[in-house]
Image (cartoon, rainbow, N blue to C red; front, top):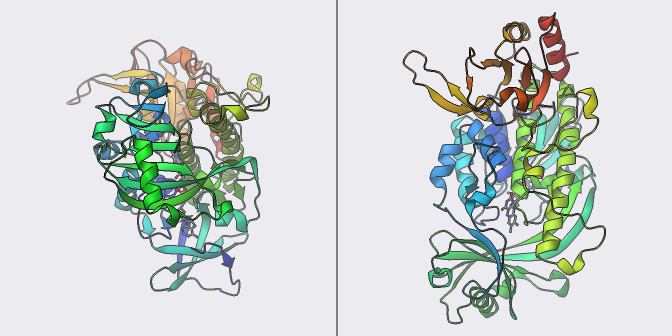
Length: 551
Ligand SMILES: Cc1cc2nc3c(=O)[nH]c(=O)nc-3n(C[C@H](O)[C@H](O)[C@H](O)COP(=O)(O)OP(=O)(O)OC[C@H]3O[C@@H](n4cnc5c(N)ncnc54)[C@H](O)[C@@H]3O)c2cc1C
């Protein structure tokens, strides 16, 4: 399918429609962006060239940080309801699904879950998750148009102009948006049109997905095998068994440079490979849809250009090892959405958007390095050399990175520290606000309830104050009213709104009982004061104005 953008005809002066935010790409990251914006009450228009959700399972592990995000936007319950009932699953290297296990990388679901988050890891494939996101975003008013392709775009000082085309009728409409989010995938036509280069390790391999139906239960023998690397005489690839054991996916290297085409695998050749991967020679198999993809480890050199922002695979492509790709894209979208929402509502200065790149580009570099390191370790150890990055603990690239930008009031001693161990949180601005178990005392008819600090971070800024920090609470309420900004305030401690069950709040957030911490809508710490101040209103107003680029 031709997916090259045309030159936008700048003579067009009238537009068929306008929107604050145009999102291009209606796969996982585009749909997440639409949901996050809609949850913030910001209208958006999303265009996706395909008729519906992709049938390829692709990402299937959504980490605790991602599930914190989906919890915050109210989508977690629906995602759990659509998820298969996995409780114990494994990623292995095998001779075949039915055959000998050579290596076992994951043995239980709890390996993916750490006490640093109240969220549960989610095992749901992308093809099951995307319909949930689509329904949630539409229910909140997002305008999602499938079967609609972006054909051209141009930006100027005031906005982005675009032409979108209905794929069936060919009817075109001009759209004027204040901002554009490019969630258009690893080959991002928008990235290419903007002339943004990439860096990293390049394309590692060309791959082919083959979806198939077959009874895999005899090969699974009661095991919940999530994903297997298969190494035998006929297949060097990977096989996934879908929930229920009646369908799966084979992923194999593919060689277009030698003239191969996907159709070459539609018949006997595909059947032979699937049977060899499953390890049952006479297995009855029905081959389904096929799709090629490139396993690559690349990062865009820039992820903002004027009014256009790259998110997800448009910004970074990584090997599936580690399951970081989609998760990183969802965090990009979450970082960007609250900023777009505040700027569109004019509650923040436009410069707030310039913090997206300095915050997310280092995370993209870090995560691509990690996915690449794992791909070398698991798939091609013979390619390792002294420049190959070393794998680190999974939670570090997921929850341990720190943001440095004008949307964080960094403390002097932090310098440009890139990471912090999420098991030993310090409350430094720029880090993810730590999970602390809390108790909400009984209030009127509402019974006492347990919750986490993470449950407090939804779409507003949040002030978490020590039990003696009434002055900070008053200052925050006053300033939020002056600035017209939604801000929630909680005093935590014996006499506060919420009780600190394990007495960990003050140490984990690095404040005294008279201090306070300001958490951004995306759950990252923006500012803190260790103790009281003589002029809390002035100090707080100054901090918030700076963070929101209002000065
Ligand atoms: C085998 C495999 C396993 C994976 N496993 C994991 C995992 O376990 N965990 C994980 O986190 N990640 C995983 N990933 C990565 C994950 O699938 C991707 O990171 C994710 O799909 C990226 O989503 P996206 O929305 O950014 O891009 P895409 O899914 O590529 O979507 C881009 C969309 O943009 C649309 N588009 C492009 N151009 C236009 C245009 N001009 N007009 C309109 N629409 C357009 C396309 O049609 C497409 O739907 C895996 C990937 C693979 C291949």
